[in-house]
Image 1 (tube, one colour):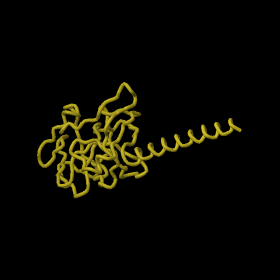
Image 2 (cartoon, one colour):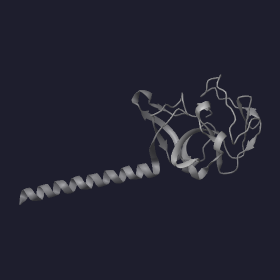
Image 3 (spheres, rainbow, N blue to C red):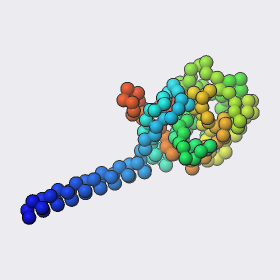
Image 4 (tube, rainbow, N blue to C red):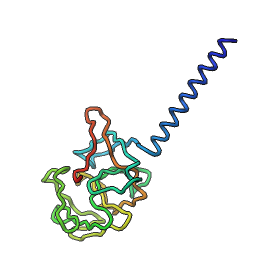
Length: 186
C-alpha cells in the first residue's frame, strides 16, 4: 500500500509541475513574447527565410511603433498569415516614392543603416510614383527591406494598429544568426 501512495504522490507532483509550466508558458505566449518564423525573402538581407524571431507583445501595449521598428502583423491581403516588415511611416506622416527613393514628409528618407545604397524602391498598386499619401490616425506604412521582393504597403495600403501583433526583439534561430533587432533611427 505504501508503494501505491508513493506512486500516486509522484504522479500528482508531475501533473502539478506540468500544469504550472503550461500556465507559465501560456501567460508568456499570450501576453509577453511570441515566436515568429520568417517566411520568404522580403526582409533580406536583415532577416533570412526560416529564421525565428522573438516578438515582444508588451511593447505595443505600452506605446506605438516608431519609424524603423520591425513589426509583426496580420497580413492585410490574408489575415490568416502574419507578415514582418519595417515601419516607414506613422500616423500624420506623408510617404512618397520618387525616382526609386522613399520620401518621408517631403524629405529623402535615409535608409543606409538597413539598406544598401544601390537599392531602389518602386511604387505599387497603392502608392503611385510621385504621389504622396498621408497616413491616417491608428495606421502605419510598412515595407520589406528587400524592396523588389516584398508585398507591403506599396501594394495593399496601410496596416491598422489593431492588426499589429508585436515588435521584433531578437533573432534566436538559427543560433549562428542570433542577434538583437535594433531600430536604426533610435
